[in-house]
Image 1 (cartoon, rainbow, N blue to C red):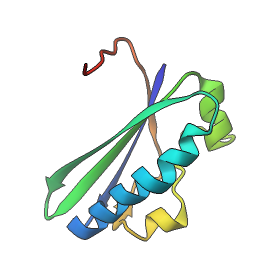
Image 2: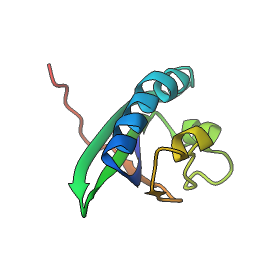
Image 3: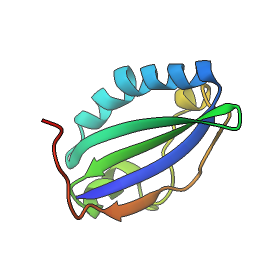
Length: 104
């Protein structure tokens, strides 16, 4: 499994709006993609803004490429989502998941 990590910054309201977008719009779309395995959306206060970090989980590099296109390290951020953000990374980082445990 591969974790795809991306970060953005938003106001408090923008972060809440992005959370709602992530939950109600983006996740349903991602769940339809072959090879998508799950996601985390994390936040923290940082210098007066909220830093958002997404971690999406994928079964293979091919699944990521099917989602992201020819350059798998390019961030995929829809204009609808950009409207909630002050700034966002243009690149993502991929990491191989060596160990994962459930929260049950």
